[in-house]
Length: 381
Image (cartoon, rainbow, N blue to C red):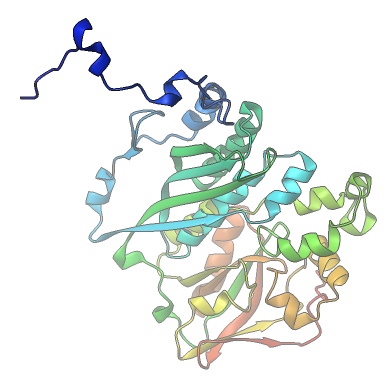
């Protein structure tokens, strides 16, 4: 037991001196740049968005120290595997901040994570976000999280947790960064695996909505730097009437629902999936290949988005450089059993997805090669 020591008046002169800082006027957390009251207001502002994403498996509510999610349904699987993915949005956020438009980048955040774990055949279950911001404004955070909520609804996963961190002195007041974390599940027997890919398999491409969330350091350098706000907002004929700002902020497509529908409708028909992100087709499709096969991609067999053509022209990129920088119009590529390609295409069409046969699997060393050099922009319907 620790004895409590008291000081009587007679002993007061012998009492320890109080620290000098106790005599100074206090500097509060808010004065240091962190407004906890505004943080609480931001949490209140996003509760509805979070609740709208909930699935029956969510346990508890927003505000706990950890997000809870039941995986009781996995007991029906022979060998359930949890699949996790994490990513960010990158410097596309700078375009959003310049435009003052914050409600779409959250969709990008979910897409980059959910599409990645989809490539294993997994069903995304839940998502967590991390928002680091220079100066917290509840309205801006609500916009950002509204986009994250919309992305979660598109992916069919629950937003069960997150963190908002105010970083005064480290970030500019209007600056923010986003990170996301997604967890899904797949039965090992149904997992998509590059070792299943065979010579003769068909490549089926799914269209991107634009640049998605990759290559923005280059896109900003050649299309945004030095431009006035007016120039960024001008409607451009070469962009189909969209402004440069709007074309650059089109959110990344989330392929979970149509692809999951195909995996359920056509079991065993899809051998592997490639999510086309940073590094383009050249440096992502090879991740879905075994070391005994190459992917031979036929250029000119799918449409290239206007914004991709615009940026590549502004940067004077040759075809090879473009194909390893941007997705160039393909956000996801399915590697499919050739005898069931028509079945897969029909299932995708039923799910509302346009498809393009963009190549085939040939003998090789796990690399991507291209046919029809020079025909990248030559697609004709």
